Amino acid sequence: MKLGSLRLVYMGSSDVEADARLHVQTLGGNLRFFLDRFGARVASVRHGAGADIVFASHMAGKSPILFFEVDDIEALRDAPGAMLIETPIGPGVLFEASGGARLGGLRIEREDYMENAWRTPGHEGAVRPEWL
Image (cartoon, rainbow, N blue to C red; front, side):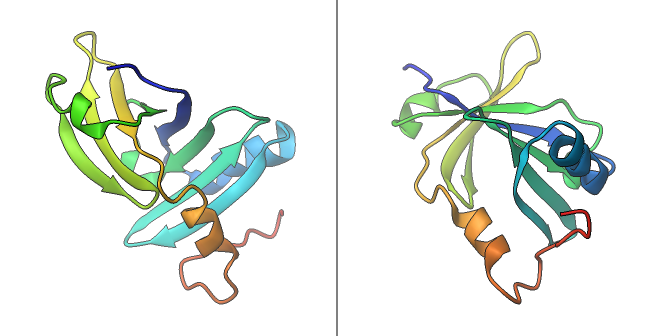
C-alpha cells in the first residue's frame, strides 16, 4: 500500500478564529471554510497548492493528524490500531505510527463539500468573520 499526496493537516486549536485569521491576514492563505456545528469550530486554510490546514476546536491539545490521499482504504485496515472513519469528504482510516505520529488515509469523494456548505447563503453553521 502506498500513500498519495498529503491533503490535510488536521490540527487542534484553542482559538480557531485567531489561527485562521493569522493564516489568512498575515500569512496570505485562502480561507476555504469556517463552520461552527455540533459543538466544534472548524476552519480550513490553504496556502498555494499545498495541503489544507484544518484548525479544529475539538482537537485542542492533541497532536496533529496528517491525512494522505489513498485509493484503497481497505489496504490500510491492517495498519497498527487502524480505525475506519467517515468524513464529510469521504471515507478514511486513522492510525498511529510506532513513534507516535498520527496518520490518516482518505479517499476523496466529495472534495469541496465543506467549502460549498460554508458558501451556501443562510447555512446555519457558517461563520463569516468580519476580517474577511
